[in-house]
Image 1: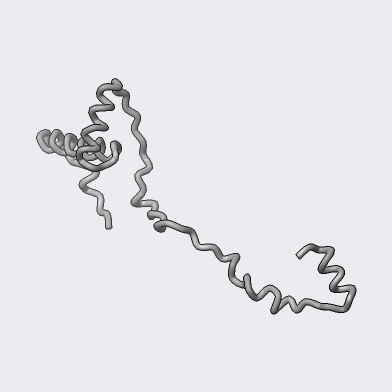
Image 2: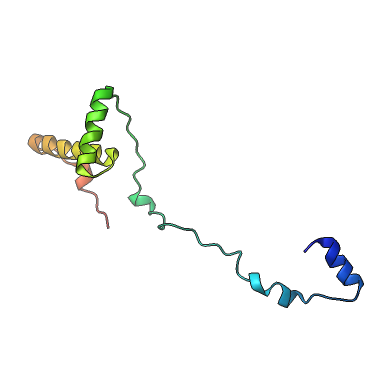
Length: 103
């Protein structure tokens, strides 16, 4: 409704009961966010690594990730973790990411 029309109704003696008039949108201002709830701060992967690769290498990694059915970042992360575990166990060193507890 335009403000002019409401002013006209008011001048003619018609009064809107705001309780009844605005009842339909009661509670509409409480919007729920779509999607999954955010992760807690202890479960976030916040450290980033940048690696340089030749285009052919990247394409090969991408093809292998597609074959495994996972995104490239997950494929690379899984392979790096496996290599780190293998090398650190062989050297008898502590593996930091295995010693953290996660739910």
